[in-house]
Amino acid sequence: IYCEMTKMKNENDKLRETMRHLTAEDLTTLTMTDLKHLDKQLEASLDRVRSRE
Image (tube, rainbow, N blue to C red):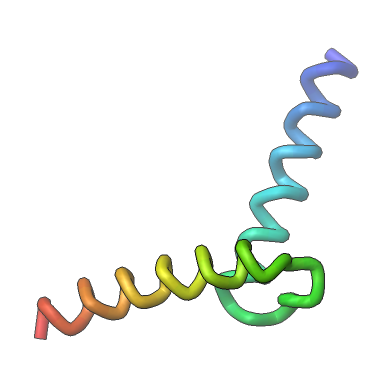
C-alpha cells in the first residue's frame, strides 16, 4: 500500500507541475527544449480553439 501511495503522490506532483507550466505559473524549471515543446502545445491548442469559432 505504501508503494502505491508513493506512486500516486509522485504522479499527482508531476500533474501539478504540468498544470503550473501550462498556466505559466512556474516556467523556471523548464529547459529551452521544454519551453519550445510547451509553445508548440499551446499553439496547437490555440489553433483548435480558433477552428471552433
